[in-house]
Amino acid sequence: MKSPNADRRTVLWVLGVMMLLVMLTAIFAPATSDDDKMPTTYNPGAAGWKGAFLLLPRLGYSVRRSDVSASMLDQVDAIHTTYVLAAPNAPAEDVQKRDYDSVERFLRRGGRVIATGSGGALFLPGGRSGKPTQFVGNLCNAVPEGNSDLAQTGSFSLYDAAPWNALEPLARVDARCGADAVLVHREYPHGGAMVYLASSEPFSNRGLKQDQSLHLLLLAVGPASGEGHRAVIFDEFYRGEQASPSDYLHGLPLRSLVAQASLVLLLLLFTYTRRSGPIREPLMVPRTSPLEFVESMGALYERAGVSKPATDGAHRRLTRFLISMCGVPSDMADSSQRTADFIGQRFGGSQGSLSTLLDRLQAARYETLRPRDALALVREADAEIERLQIMMKSSQSQPLVQEMK
Image (tube, rainbow, N blue to C red; front, side, top):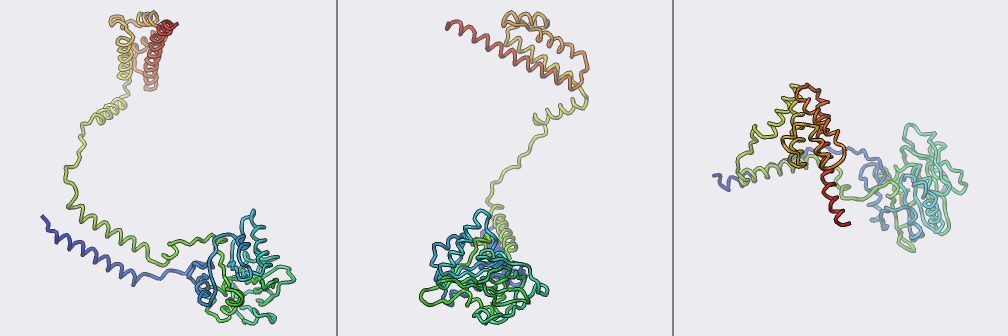
Protein backbone atom coordinates (compact mmCIF):
# COMPACT_ATOMS: atom_id res chain seq x y z
CA MET A 1 0.00 0.00 0.00
CA LYS A 2 1.28 3.43 -0.93
CA SER A 3 2.07 5.75 1.98
CA PRO A 4 0.28 9.13 2.36
CA ASN A 5 3.63 10.95 2.18
CA ALA A 6 4.16 9.72 -1.38
CA ASP A 7 0.81 11.14 -2.47
CA ARG A 8 1.58 14.45 -0.74
CA ARG A 9 4.89 14.68 -2.57
CA THR A 10 3.08 14.06 -5.87
CA VAL A 11 0.66 16.93 -5.23
CA LEU A 12 3.51 19.26 -4.24
CA TRP A 13 5.39 18.39 -7.42
CA VAL A 14 2.28 19.15 -9.50
CA LEU A 15 1.81 22.52 -7.78
CA GLY A 16 5.46 23.36 -8.31
CA VAL A 17 5.25 22.58 -12.01
CA MET A 18 2.12 24.71 -12.28
CA MET A 19 3.79 27.72 -10.65
CA LEU A 20 6.79 27.32 -12.94
CA LEU A 21 4.57 27.26 -16.04
CA VAL A 22 2.71 30.37 -14.88
CA MET A 23 5.97 32.24 -14.34
CA LEU A 24 7.36 31.22 -17.72
CA THR A 25 4.12 32.24 -19.44
CA ALA A 26 4.14 35.64 -17.74
CA ILE A 27 7.76 36.26 -18.77
CA PHE A 28 7.76 34.95 -22.33
CA ALA A 29 4.14 35.56 -23.38
CA PRO A 30 4.00 37.60 -26.60
CA ALA A 31 2.65 41.11 -26.39
CA THR A 32 -0.96 41.51 -27.46
CA SER A 33 -1.64 43.38 -30.69
CA ASP A 34 -3.13 46.87 -30.53
CA ASP A 35 -5.88 46.37 -33.10
CA ASP A 36 -8.88 47.96 -31.34
CA LYS A 37 -9.72 51.15 -33.26
CA MET A 38 -12.79 52.14 -31.27
CA PRO A 39 -12.42 55.51 -29.45
CA THR A 40 -14.07 54.32 -26.24
CA THR A 41 -13.14 55.05 -22.65
CA TYR A 42 -12.72 51.29 -22.10
CA ASN A 43 -9.99 50.97 -24.76
CA PRO A 44 -6.44 51.39 -23.38
CA GLY A 45 -4.92 51.06 -26.86
CA ALA A 46 -3.53 53.79 -29.04
CA ALA A 47 -6.92 54.68 -30.55
CA GLY A 48 -8.86 54.54 -27.26
CA TRP A 49 -9.95 57.41 -25.06
CA LYS A 50 -9.20 55.83 -21.70
CA GLY A 51 -6.34 58.30 -21.16
CA ALA A 52 -8.69 61.30 -21.39
CA PHE A 53 -11.21 59.54 -19.11
CA LEU A 54 -8.53 59.02 -16.42
CA LEU A 55 -6.79 62.38 -16.88
CA LEU A 56 -9.72 64.77 -16.49
CA PRO A 57 -10.63 63.71 -12.90
CA ARG A 58 -7.06 64.55 -11.83
CA LEU A 59 -7.53 68.03 -13.24
CA GLY A 60 -10.67 68.69 -11.20
CA TYR A 61 -13.45 67.45 -13.47
CA SER A 62 -16.25 65.12 -12.49
CA VAL A 63 -16.16 62.37 -15.13
CA ARG A 64 -18.58 59.52 -15.81
CA ARG A 65 -19.77 57.27 -18.64
CA SER A 66 -23.28 57.25 -20.11
CA ASP A 67 -24.94 54.00 -21.16
CA VAL A 68 -28.26 55.68 -22.07
CA SER A 69 -29.40 57.77 -25.03
CA ALA A 70 -28.91 61.53 -25.40
CA SER A 71 -32.45 62.16 -24.19
CA MET A 72 -31.08 62.03 -20.64
CA LEU A 73 -29.50 65.47 -21.27
CA ASP A 74 -32.88 67.05 -20.48
CA GLN A 75 -32.38 66.12 -16.81
CA VAL A 76 -28.78 67.34 -16.29
CA ASP A 77 -27.38 70.69 -15.25
CA ALA A 78 -26.49 71.93 -18.72
CA ILE A 79 -24.45 74.97 -17.69
CA HIS A 80 -21.95 72.82 -15.77
CA THR A 81 -21.92 69.75 -18.06
CA THR A 82 -19.94 68.72 -21.16
CA TYR A 83 -21.26 65.86 -23.31
CA VAL A 84 -18.67 63.98 -25.39
CA LEU A 85 -19.63 61.94 -28.48
CA ALA A 86 -16.56 60.13 -29.84
CA ALA A 87 -17.36 58.80 -33.34
CA PRO A 88 -20.85 57.59 -32.36
CA ASN A 89 -23.14 55.47 -34.47
CA ALA A 90 -26.36 57.04 -35.69
CA PRO A 91 -29.38 56.25 -33.48
CA ALA A 92 -32.31 54.22 -34.74
CA GLU A 93 -34.57 55.98 -37.23
CA ASP A 94 -37.56 56.07 -34.88
CA VAL A 95 -35.63 57.98 -32.18
CA GLN A 96 -33.25 60.10 -34.26
CA LYS A 97 -35.32 63.28 -34.01
CA ARG A 98 -35.79 62.85 -30.25
CA ASP A 99 -32.06 62.39 -29.58
CA TYR A 100 -30.94 65.19 -31.93
CA ASP A 101 -33.47 67.59 -30.41
CA SER A 102 -32.26 66.71 -26.92
CA VAL A 103 -28.72 67.68 -27.89
CA GLU A 104 -29.90 71.00 -29.36
CA ARG A 105 -31.95 71.85 -26.25
CA PHE A 106 -28.93 70.97 -24.12
CA LEU A 107 -26.79 73.43 -26.10
CA ARG A 108 -29.35 76.20 -25.82
CA ARG A 109 -29.55 75.71 -22.05
CA GLY A 110 -25.80 76.35 -21.75
CA GLY A 111 -24.30 72.89 -22.19
CA ARG A 112 -21.17 72.01 -24.15
CA VAL A 113 -20.99 69.19 -26.71
CA ILE A 114 -17.85 67.68 -28.24
CA ALA A 115 -18.50 65.46 -31.27
CA THR A 116 -16.01 63.71 -33.54
CA GLY A 117 -16.29 61.88 -36.85
CA SER A 118 -19.08 61.74 -39.39
CA GLY A 119 -21.50 60.18 -36.89
CA GLY A 120 -20.83 62.96 -34.38
CA ALA A 121 -21.61 65.66 -36.93
CA LEU A 122 -25.18 64.36 -37.26
CA PHE A 123 -25.85 65.06 -33.57
CA LEU A 124 -24.97 68.75 -33.93
CA PRO A 125 -27.61 71.25 -35.11
CA GLY A 126 -27.33 71.52 -38.88
CA GLY A 127 -24.22 69.34 -38.84
CA ARG A 128 -23.01 67.36 -41.84
CA SER A 129 -19.65 65.92 -42.89
CA GLY A 130 -18.13 65.04 -46.23
CA LYS A 131 -15.18 63.24 -47.78
CA PRO A 132 -11.66 64.68 -47.45
CA THR A 133 -10.11 66.36 -50.48
CA GLN A 134 -6.67 67.51 -49.34
CA PHE A 135 -5.34 64.54 -47.33
CA VAL A 136 -2.18 62.71 -48.36
CA GLY A 137 -3.12 59.12 -47.61
CA ASN A 138 -4.95 59.08 -44.26
CA LEU A 139 -2.75 61.67 -42.52
CA CYS A 140 -3.50 65.36 -42.17
CA ASN A 141 -1.66 68.13 -40.31
CA ALA A 142 -4.31 70.69 -39.38
CA VAL A 143 -3.44 74.38 -39.83
CA PRO A 144 -5.09 76.85 -37.39
CA GLU A 145 -7.43 79.48 -38.82
CA GLY A 146 -8.76 82.57 -37.04
CA ASN A 147 -8.13 84.07 -33.62
CA SER A 148 -10.33 81.89 -31.42
CA ASP A 149 -8.98 80.09 -28.37
CA LEU A 150 -9.27 76.74 -30.17
CA ALA A 151 -7.28 78.04 -33.14
CA GLN A 152 -4.49 79.28 -30.89
CA THR A 153 -3.68 75.73 -29.73
CA GLY A 154 -1.60 75.26 -32.90
CA SER A 155 -1.25 72.48 -35.45
CA PHE A 156 -2.23 68.89 -34.70
CA SER A 157 -2.43 65.58 -36.62
CA LEU A 158 -5.53 63.70 -37.74
CA TYR A 159 -6.16 60.31 -39.31
CA ASP A 160 -9.19 59.25 -41.36
CA ALA A 161 -10.90 62.61 -40.91
CA ALA A 162 -14.45 63.52 -41.98
CA PRO A 163 -14.35 67.31 -42.63
CA TRP A 164 -17.24 69.61 -41.75
CA ASN A 165 -19.45 70.10 -44.79
CA ALA A 166 -22.52 71.93 -43.45
CA LEU A 167 -23.80 75.29 -44.63
CA GLU A 168 -24.09 76.66 -41.10
CA PRO A 169 -23.30 80.41 -41.04
CA LEU A 170 -22.92 80.57 -37.24
CA ALA A 171 -20.29 77.80 -37.11
CA ARG A 172 -16.70 79.09 -37.13
CA VAL A 173 -13.81 77.11 -38.61
CA ASP A 174 -10.78 76.93 -36.30
CA ALA A 175 -8.50 74.59 -38.31
CA ARG A 176 -8.27 73.27 -41.83
CA CYS A 177 -6.44 70.63 -43.82
CA GLY A 178 -6.11 72.43 -47.13
CA ALA A 179 -9.68 73.49 -47.94
CA ASP A 180 -11.27 70.95 -45.54
CA ALA A 181 -12.61 72.24 -42.22
CA VAL A 182 -11.50 69.78 -39.52
CA LEU A 183 -12.14 71.85 -36.36
CA VAL A 184 -15.36 73.83 -36.01
CA HIS A 185 -17.14 75.45 -33.09
CA ARG A 186 -20.33 77.43 -32.47
CA GLU A 187 -21.29 79.37 -29.40
CA TYR A 188 -24.73 79.34 -27.75
CA PRO A 189 -26.38 81.47 -25.05
CA HIS A 190 -25.59 80.93 -21.36
CA GLY A 191 -22.07 79.73 -22.19
CA GLY A 192 -23.08 76.78 -24.33
CA ALA A 193 -20.87 75.66 -27.20
CA MET A 194 -20.52 72.86 -29.71
CA VAL A 195 -17.11 71.66 -30.89
CA TYR A 196 -16.73 69.40 -33.91
CA LEU A 197 -13.49 67.55 -34.61
CA ALA A 198 -13.21 65.66 -37.88
CA SER A 199 -11.31 62.78 -36.26
CA SER A 200 -11.03 61.19 -32.83
CA GLU A 201 -7.24 60.99 -33.13
CA PRO A 202 -6.25 64.22 -31.25
CA PHE A 203 -8.06 63.13 -28.05
CA SER A 204 -6.96 59.48 -28.24
CA ASN A 205 -4.32 57.90 -26.01
CA ARG A 206 -1.79 58.37 -28.78
CA GLY A 207 -2.89 61.89 -29.72
CA LEU A 208 -2.80 63.30 -26.18
CA LYS A 209 0.96 62.83 -26.15
CA GLN A 210 1.09 66.09 -28.16
CA ASP A 211 0.83 69.29 -26.14
CA GLN A 212 -1.44 70.88 -28.75
CA SER A 213 -3.96 68.03 -28.48
CA LEU A 214 -4.03 68.18 -24.68
CA HIS A 215 -4.50 71.96 -24.76
CA LEU A 216 -7.29 71.55 -27.32
CA LEU A 217 -9.06 68.95 -25.14
CA LEU A 218 -9.08 71.23 -22.08
CA LEU A 219 -10.40 74.20 -24.07
CA ALA A 220 -13.13 72.09 -25.70
CA VAL A 221 -14.27 70.59 -22.38
CA GLY A 222 -14.42 73.97 -20.66
CA PRO A 223 -13.06 75.24 -17.35
CA ALA A 224 -13.07 72.81 -14.44
CA SER A 225 -13.75 75.46 -11.81
CA GLY A 226 -15.85 78.58 -11.64
CA GLU A 227 -19.38 79.06 -10.49
CA GLY A 228 -19.90 75.33 -10.29
CA HIS A 229 -18.06 72.03 -10.65
CA ARG A 230 -18.05 70.90 -14.30
CA ALA A 231 -19.12 67.35 -15.13
CA VAL A 232 -17.91 65.53 -18.26
CA ILE A 233 -20.13 62.75 -19.64
CA PHE A 234 -18.52 60.34 -22.12
CA ASP A 235 -21.09 58.61 -24.30
CA GLU A 236 -20.85 54.82 -24.59
CA PHE A 237 -24.47 54.16 -25.56
CA TYR A 238 -24.22 54.80 -29.30
CA ARG A 239 -21.47 52.19 -29.72
CA GLY A 240 -23.17 49.53 -27.63
CA GLU A 241 -20.23 49.36 -25.23
CA GLN A 242 -21.09 47.86 -21.82
CA ALA A 243 -18.76 47.74 -18.89
CA SER A 244 -18.11 44.19 -17.71
CA PRO A 245 -15.40 42.35 -15.79
CA SER A 246 -14.18 40.85 -19.07
CA ASP A 247 -12.93 44.30 -20.13
CA TYR A 248 -10.17 44.02 -17.55
CA LEU A 249 -9.01 40.66 -18.89
CA HIS A 250 -7.78 41.97 -22.24
CA GLY A 251 -4.08 41.32 -22.73
CA LEU A 252 -3.83 38.32 -20.40
CA PRO A 253 -2.73 34.92 -21.77
CA LEU A 254 -6.09 33.39 -20.92
CA ARG A 255 -5.73 30.34 -23.17
CA SER A 256 -2.45 29.33 -21.55
CA LEU A 257 -3.79 29.88 -18.06
CA VAL A 258 -6.94 27.87 -18.74
CA ALA A 259 -4.92 25.03 -20.27
CA GLN A 260 -2.56 24.93 -17.28
CA ALA A 261 -5.38 25.03 -14.75
CA SER A 262 -7.19 22.23 -16.60
CA LEU A 263 -4.03 20.12 -16.61
CA VAL A 264 -3.50 20.65 -12.88
CA LEU A 265 -7.14 19.77 -12.17
CA LEU A 266 -6.85 16.54 -14.15
CA LEU A 267 -3.67 15.59 -12.30
CA LEU A 268 -5.29 16.27 -8.93
CA LEU A 269 -8.32 14.19 -9.87
CA PHE A 270 -6.06 11.40 -11.04
CA THR A 271 -4.04 11.36 -7.80
CA TYR A 272 -7.27 11.16 -5.78
CA THR A 273 -9.48 8.85 -7.82
CA ARG A 274 -6.78 6.28 -8.53
CA ARG A 275 -6.75 5.26 -4.84
CA SER A 276 -10.22 6.32 -3.62
CA GLY A 277 -12.49 5.08 -6.39
CA PRO A 278 -14.60 1.91 -6.07
CA ILE A 279 -13.06 -1.37 -7.13
CA ARG A 280 -15.34 -3.67 -9.13
CA GLU A 281 -15.23 -6.02 -12.03
CA PRO A 282 -15.85 -4.51 -15.47
CA LEU A 283 -19.29 -5.10 -16.89
CA MET A 284 -19.17 -7.68 -19.69
CA VAL A 285 -22.19 -7.99 -21.98
CA PRO A 286 -22.65 -11.66 -23.01
CA ARG A 287 -22.71 -12.35 -26.72
CA THR A 288 -25.72 -14.65 -26.28
CA SER A 289 -28.10 -11.87 -25.23
CA PRO A 290 -31.72 -12.18 -26.47
CA LEU A 291 -31.51 -8.99 -28.50
CA GLU A 292 -28.42 -10.15 -30.34
CA PHE A 293 -30.13 -13.49 -31.07
CA VAL A 294 -33.21 -11.73 -32.48
CA GLU A 295 -31.09 -9.44 -34.65
CA SER A 296 -29.05 -12.39 -35.93
CA MET A 297 -32.15 -14.41 -36.80
CA GLY A 298 -33.73 -11.39 -38.48
CA ALA A 299 -30.60 -10.85 -40.57
CA LEU A 300 -30.64 -14.53 -41.62
CA TYR A 301 -34.29 -14.40 -42.70
CA GLU A 302 -33.69 -11.14 -44.56
CA ARG A 303 -30.70 -12.57 -46.39
CA ALA A 304 -32.61 -15.71 -47.38
CA GLY A 305 -35.68 -13.73 -48.52
CA VAL A 306 -38.02 -16.03 -46.53
CA SER A 307 -41.53 -14.68 -45.85
CA LYS A 308 -43.25 -17.85 -44.71
CA PRO A 309 -42.30 -17.59 -40.98
CA ALA A 310 -43.83 -14.10 -40.82
CA THR A 311 -47.13 -15.13 -42.38
CA ASP A 312 -47.28 -18.34 -40.31
CA GLY A 313 -46.77 -16.30 -37.15
CA ALA A 314 -49.57 -13.92 -38.13
CA HIS A 315 -51.87 -16.91 -38.85
CA ARG A 316 -51.13 -18.45 -35.44
CA ARG A 317 -51.78 -15.15 -33.64
CA LEU A 318 -55.12 -14.67 -35.37
CA THR A 319 -56.19 -18.31 -34.79
CA ARG A 320 -55.16 -18.18 -31.12
CA PHE A 321 -57.13 -14.97 -30.65
CA LEU A 322 -60.23 -16.48 -32.27
CA ILE A 323 -60.10 -19.53 -30.01
CA SER A 324 -59.10 -17.92 -26.70
CA MET A 325 -60.90 -14.60 -26.90
CA CYS A 326 -63.77 -15.06 -29.37
CA GLY A 327 -64.82 -18.57 -28.25
CA VAL A 328 -64.35 -20.34 -31.59
CA PRO A 329 -64.11 -24.15 -31.03
CA SER A 330 -60.68 -25.55 -31.80
CA ASP A 331 -62.04 -28.14 -34.23
CA MET A 332 -63.79 -25.38 -36.16
CA ALA A 333 -60.73 -23.12 -36.47
CA ASP A 334 -59.36 -25.08 -39.44
CA SER A 335 -62.35 -24.05 -41.59
CA SER A 336 -62.30 -20.37 -42.52
CA GLN A 337 -65.97 -20.27 -43.58
CA ARG A 338 -67.27 -21.98 -40.45
CA THR A 339 -65.14 -19.69 -38.32
CA ALA A 340 -66.51 -16.61 -40.08
CA ASP A 341 -70.11 -17.88 -39.69
CA PHE A 342 -69.56 -18.46 -35.97
CA ILE A 343 -68.19 -14.95 -35.45
CA GLY A 344 -71.07 -13.47 -37.48
CA GLN A 345 -73.67 -15.33 -35.38
CA ARG A 346 -72.05 -14.30 -32.10
CA PHE A 347 -71.19 -10.67 -32.78
CA GLY A 348 -73.37 -9.89 -35.81
CA GLY A 349 -72.44 -8.41 -39.15
CA SER A 350 -70.85 -9.87 -42.22
CA GLN A 351 -67.51 -11.58 -41.68
CA GLY A 352 -66.53 -12.12 -45.32
CA SER A 353 -63.25 -10.25 -44.81
CA LEU A 354 -62.29 -12.62 -41.99
CA SER A 355 -62.98 -15.70 -44.15
CA THR A 356 -60.96 -14.25 -47.04
CA LEU A 357 -58.04 -13.35 -44.75
CA LEU A 358 -57.92 -16.84 -43.23
CA ASP A 359 -57.88 -18.39 -46.70
CA ARG A 360 -55.02 -16.14 -47.77
CA LEU A 361 -53.00 -16.94 -44.65
CA GLN A 362 -53.47 -20.68 -45.21
CA ALA A 363 -52.49 -20.35 -48.88
CA ALA A 364 -49.34 -18.41 -47.91
CA ARG A 365 -47.94 -21.63 -46.43
CA TYR A 366 -47.49 -23.05 -49.90
CA GLU A 367 -46.53 -19.87 -51.74
CA THR A 368 -43.36 -17.79 -51.89
CA LEU A 369 -44.50 -14.22 -51.34
CA ARG A 370 -42.47 -11.11 -51.91
CA PRO A 371 -41.42 -9.35 -48.68
CA ARG A 372 -43.73 -6.45 -49.50
CA ASP A 373 -46.77 -8.73 -49.97
CA ALA A 374 -45.96 -10.72 -46.84
CA LEU A 375 -45.70 -7.50 -44.80
CA ALA A 376 -49.09 -6.32 -46.11
CA LEU A 377 -50.65 -9.69 -45.18
CA VAL A 378 -49.22 -9.55 -41.64
CA ARG A 379 -50.58 -6.02 -41.18
CA GLU A 380 -54.03 -7.15 -42.35
CA ALA A 381 -54.01 -9.92 -39.73
CA ASP A 382 -53.10 -7.46 -36.96
CA ALA A 383 -55.81 -5.04 -38.17
CA GLU A 384 -58.38 -7.88 -38.12
CA ILE A 385 -57.50 -8.66 -34.50
CA GLU A 386 -58.06 -5.00 -33.57
CA ARG A 387 -61.41 -5.01 -35.40
CA LEU A 388 -62.56 -8.10 -33.54
CA GLN A 389 -61.51 -6.55 -30.22
CA ILE A 390 -63.68 -3.49 -30.94
CA MET A 391 -66.62 -5.74 -31.83
CA MET A 392 -66.19 -7.66 -28.57
CA LYS A 393 -66.21 -4.44 -26.48
CA SER A 394 -69.32 -3.11 -28.23
CA SER A 395 -71.17 -6.44 -27.79
CA GLN A 396 -70.32 -6.46 -24.05
CA SER A 397 -71.58 -2.90 -23.48
CA GLN A 398 -74.86 -3.36 -25.44
CA PRO A 399 -76.63 -5.59 -22.85
CA LEU A 400 -75.81 -3.09 -20.13
CA VAL A 401 -77.46 -0.29 -22.10
CA GLN A 402 -80.58 -2.44 -22.64
CA GLU A 403 -80.82 -3.22 -18.91
CA MET A 404 -80.61 0.50 -18.04
CA LYS A 405 -83.47 1.20 -20.44
